[in-house]
Image 1 (cartoon, rainbow, N blue to C red):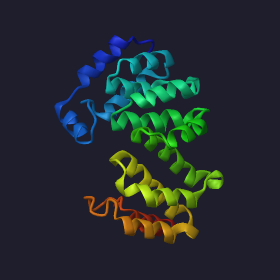
Image 2: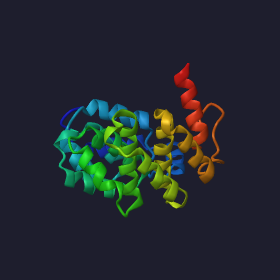
Image 3: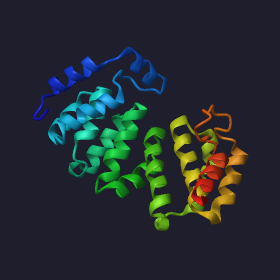
Image 4: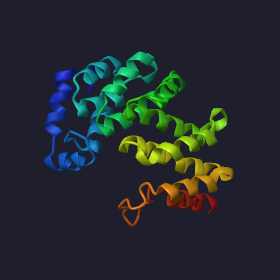
Length: 222
């Protein structure tokens, strides 16, 4: 499928709508009923079509926006466009895919990370934290890791859910990747108790930072 129209893509997405998929997605805050594997297959057939991606995003439909993220050219977006897109991406999957598949691959990622990090909108701020967490593992030299721990210690417990999760991920990543700060990271996690009682399947790692850190450090040592 190449050179498709918005109407054609929307029609195919509508045909893929499945009540069971919608029920699962809605449990995670998403508002579409398309199986993500089938959505990815559609995007693979469409291949890269940036203009179509922009048009699909403009529809506001979450499934169409997920396709848009997969078929766009991240390097063609300007910072102001990505900022507007993020602020309009209110469902978790669209938000996460936009940050992970587009923003991280664009040349403006550091500019946007800094701008979003302290934003008054907690959902926008969570994107800044997610990009910062990426640097904690890959390129921490320009970061004040101790300062990040200060903010996490002072603000994470009372932050809104999306921002709290992003801060918690950063806390865990600092503890996992930086042995000199591991004790402090674990201590903060223990004192705050964020996600300590989060229901976790037996084959998954708990998001509670002290457990998460211990598990990942153990895996690295093997």
